[in-house]
Length: 405
Image (tube, rainbow, N blue to C red; front, side, top):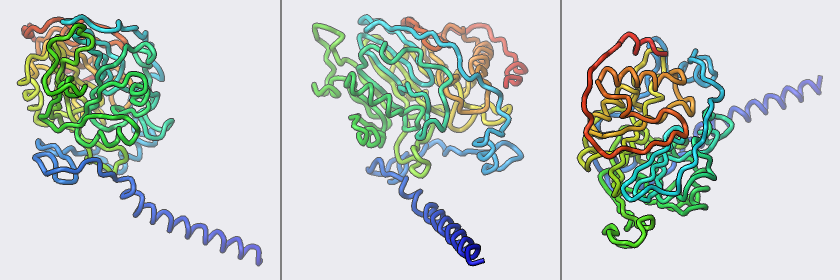
């Protein structure tokens, strides 16, 4: 009996300790995981502590007939009846040339939001991720089903990287460390994200919406671009504009919106490049604002992770194909690459729903499919010179669009 009593007391003490530890964790851990990435004056999208979308905040609604807590629990446990995804897809990586000609522009979709753009001798990467998991705790979290369309060792020397925000599928620290150690590229992001990068030994330049920086400034050569130089491959003759989009940021949940999210317009001598980053629609006027910077030869626009229950056609934080086509129209762009699909499973739609839906919506809008390319990982395209998009015949099959899972 004394042994039983001692065991019961030990068990009771252990349970009490665990309860107290859990209570303390609930109280202490969230503030501990919070971070102040940026301090500065209030603005139309910063309240002195957190950033926000001036065109309306993002909400995370649950499917009709459910509550948010139960929806998240089913999502984590894999009991949400999502359509099946393949465990892996075939990828044939390409090997890019070292650089593009003075007026040339070449683009390769690596996967997710990562695109290599080679324009006027400048090698640019958007939101680079070569890791197998988009997660703070791999192997927990979204796993890559499509290997990168360019092997890391086959990348040319990278001159410029733009980072749209601090989510793990867009700010991948292991990849960025490798790129920094290998190439010492210039890195441009939005306010607060530079704090995360610098804490990991990666220097970066952070700007607010509406601000810009030239390649010459990034290289420490003064405010004006270098117009005359003997070898254009070594001319930092470009300008990066940090522009508005509609999203949110966090690394741990409790640090929500401590750093800003953004899109970019990159001016080069070969033409302008627009990178939407990760974005919902909001008022979509961010596309109009980007268009005012100048003609966009190449627009990099997300089309996936828009569905979180059957039949949903859009979410606050991600645009689907319909809104991507509308953004393309508002941008008055000439060529687009659809991204943010088929690499990491982040949402409810089937693996190939975004590109199939994109095809149907382009037909609805009378836009030739050739204006949106590529759709294969590792596919490399020579971006045509800028030319306004000529509208074509509209053929819309709303039932086929609605039937896509």
